[in-house]
Length: 142
Figure (cartoon, rainbow, N blue to C red):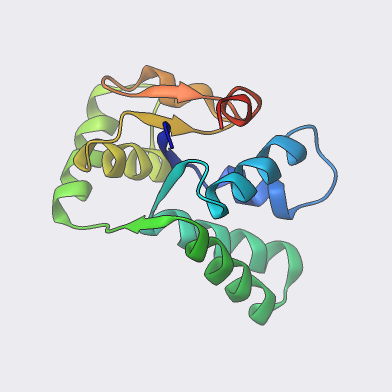
């Protein structure tokens, strides 16, 4: 297992959603993380964001929570604490490309010594100390 990366919420969102160009590589990444081909980590906020999105799209509370639990079982879930919160606020202040939940994901990665984020959102490339991988590129690496 050579790759360790924090996975953004858009990865399971596209993997679980309807047809989209990002669906296949995102699904491949979920499967690779689940089979141990790479160490995928996620912020607590990523799971919350996924559940929120799935509830909004499906209106099915049990399905949304089930998707959250299934996704949480695939990734190592890292905590969202006061250190991550302060780091996220600093990132928002200092990095124009990053905001909101993405700042929390980035701060979670940095606080835990993880230097790679897999996301469809290139804003992560602007965060000092992080390397951004899009899903097709990441899927080829695992």
